[in-house]
Image (cartoon, rainbow, N blue to C red):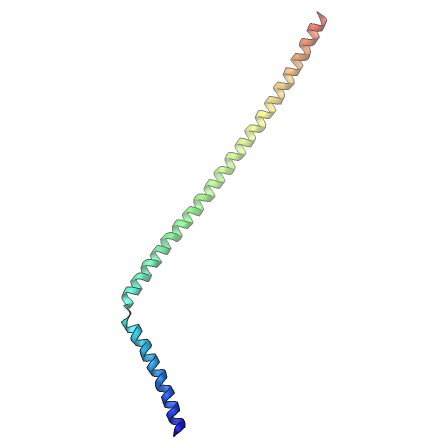
Amino acid sequence: MLQYKNTKSKRLEELETKAREFEVLSSVNLGKILSLLESKERKIGSLSKTHENMDDYVRAMSQINQQEMMKVKQKAKEETKFKMEAMTKLEGLRQELQMIQGND
């Protein structure tokens, strides 16, 4: 009989605890919470798309930057080549001029 009472009192406490939990849940406005969650999900979706678009933009800008860097490097290489050719021609002309002046 004593064991029966102990078991029943424990079970009663468990049920009372669950009843209190249900009371708390019943006072919560589930519609409002669902609406808030849906709103947050839409915002997350929008931000994810924005993030993806920004990633695409960054990749495109990086590619453009690399192409421009290649063009600048190529142009610098060509200008260096032309400068060296001009310096070589100038040195040749100087030597020619010195020979002409030396012969006079």
